[in-house]
Image (cartoon, rainbow over all chains, first blue to last red; front, side, top):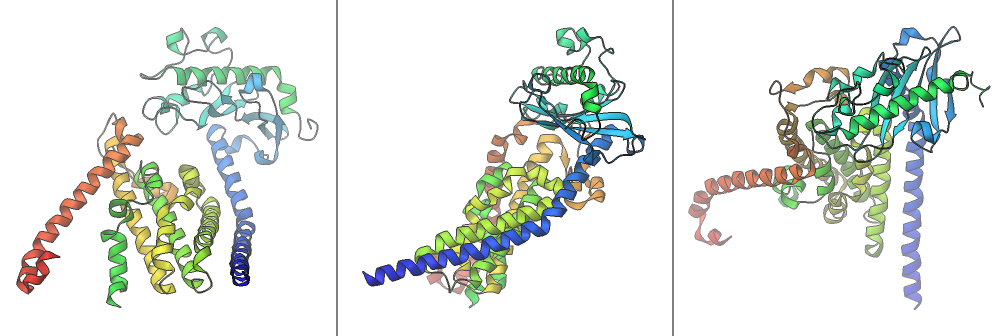
Length: 211
Length: 230
């Protein structure tokens, strides 16, 4: 019995020793890459925002100027959504957010939408989706220019009742093979524009004031 | 000694015992991330790095580990190595991280990493184990790149699309468009395309090996009839 107990405890000691050493190594890697990762994420965010609004249109650090909003009925998700604001000389230029189109063909579609202060769309991009490859994935910018058609549109152009895909009597093209996907994107974009229109003051309020 | 010479290790890992084509271990990432050459190579290189570090670490600690607890220890080492590799990719190649996503942490569950630890690294020295890790990883990268090339060219008519994820800005010019106005072949991009493509590649490799075997056979016959049965 004694030898069994000894062999068990030595095996346990080996496991504990390895766990301690290797956890330490992971902690070291984490702490030495943390800042690099944060910077890479910030750069990725900035470059995707700059695709919608050119960097020379604003002069603030967008990644530092943001508010969190929770608006499930407008933004398609009950999670908080971060709204980033672009300003020039303190005047609102545009805002960006990542609303969700909850009714995609195979799950929610996460969008990045930029809206200028006058209510026109700077552009729409798809950040994440699970639509069928080759059918519904033409909403991705790298697969087709479809998503670029949103730039410059607003709630008055086309008229609100024409904010639909052509198949439903609206103004937006749909490509062969998938109608549900573009329908979801168009609807989510229209909802976001309506949200920006009705909550403009709150969304552009300087950081801190909005809490 | 000649049994595990460095050249033999390299040849085994890349060709004779290729994890993708022969041993058929670690098929989950192989099938999931082989929809383009760049994704495949990125995943292959991440696996190679993880294999190399875990093999060296396990080889170094092989005299400390008791046989009863070796599997938990190996898994722990592999999980820690993969986590560190994941953090490094997130920091230095964020685009690739976005493309591969969940499959980087899943390298932990790639049986070929544990398989090499169990069958090679815990019995051999550090240098040979490191070599084995690189060779096995390169074999996996080769399998992923070939399958990726097959699926990408059939599926969307390009090669090396999004190479900028791996190589930075200049990679953008690497993309080859094989045919203008190619409509795409959906099956090749979807998961079944991975199974069918892998099957075809294995068949090609077997034909290739059988040819090589036939070329060797006459020489064996001359060497002596005793070898014929082997």
